[in-house]
Image 1 (cartoon, helix red, strand yellow):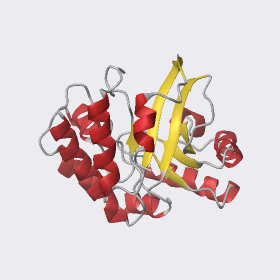
Image 2 (cartoon, one colour; image 1 turned 45 degrees about the vertical axis):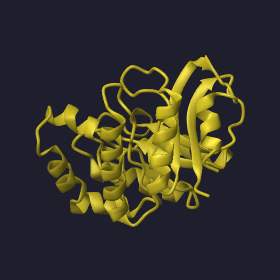
Image 3 (cartoon, one colour; image 1 turned 60 degrees about the vertical axis):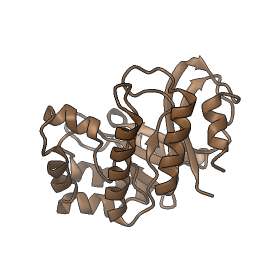
Length: 223
């Protein structure tokens, strides 16, 4: 049975049936000069420890600020030695992010691979406990395209020889609408079939938590 981690936020959310994942955003842990913010890192560590959660640092700057990332991870290690920590989007970069950064340049994947395999990247990835690539679905994608991209990302992430827990979301990444049930089921079964587990993310503070939501019930089928 592979682990499912919960990094969702809903109104009046009750306790999730899955292990929590605390996702902390860049502005909370790095200042504008990419210097770590000790108080922000300490707060993130405390929240994760209080909830017996794993921790992911969401640092979405391109090109990656590897020295800043490594410094943040080092502070986490110092403050909470037993906390499992990683980076959102680690392992490799998604096709969506690449198309935004490179405006559809055909060599985007090769360019990203070169950057993600650099010595500075290796130092950061060596220091994490797992990798967490982003495998969100866009409303303009076909499930076939998503499956191909997901396979690439998870396979590329496995090269770091760490567990791969990709971020997946029951809502479309571009328009925020709920993904149809059959598509969502195909996504989670495909992803968990090749990854070591899943991190489910959704930021919906305006939607009431529903423990009987079909997307949540579908996850139970994995376990």
